[in-house]
Length: 262
Image 1 (tube, helix red, strand yellow):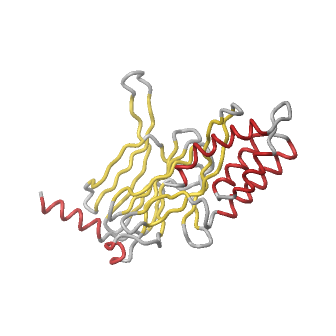
Image 2 (cartoon, rainbow, N blue to C red; image 1 turned 90 degrees about the horizontal axis):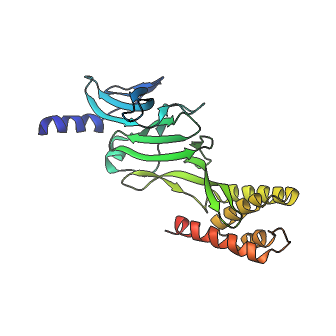
């Protein structure tokens, strides 16, 4: 048993990754598949389609298998792909100069997408939920994989759900890789431009949701003056701004302080 486990580990450690063919990715020693599989719900009897991830070695032996709730496919995004990763990584990856990641992207059948990343030396290392927004995963001008995810939050003060963008970067920690929310450095201009466009729309239409979106982005980048200016411009139906702006400000800060300051 010890020999077989060591053999599988050795195969994973020194595996080269090459080409992608549809839903099956073949390499010199491993093949990756991400296919839809139907199953019957025990309670309702309904047929449920899920995604099945299978990784086999050159002999056809399954070395990893997982049944997910996401059927392969993200519109125009590849359901199975290989990505080069240039950030700091574990010593084993550096030694072999192969820091490629295998991506599995699927949806629930509607507009709810999830990208999962697999590293041959470690296993599943990171995942990013795109919710109902567009799937965005591409290299930025610094050569780092970056995604913009549109989350939603309920703001009680205006009794509405508010959609807001969060920029994520795929970073290496020295021991693994992960998606990290970026609120200041390279994402500053994105948030600032988004805030400006939302505030302009608010001034043109009077839609308070646009003002709240603008304020959230300014809070992310630490622009306290701009943040206060946007909130102070928000008025309720009677033209009063102070009570409403304070309520909105409290909700934004309560929800996002820990998110960007942990």
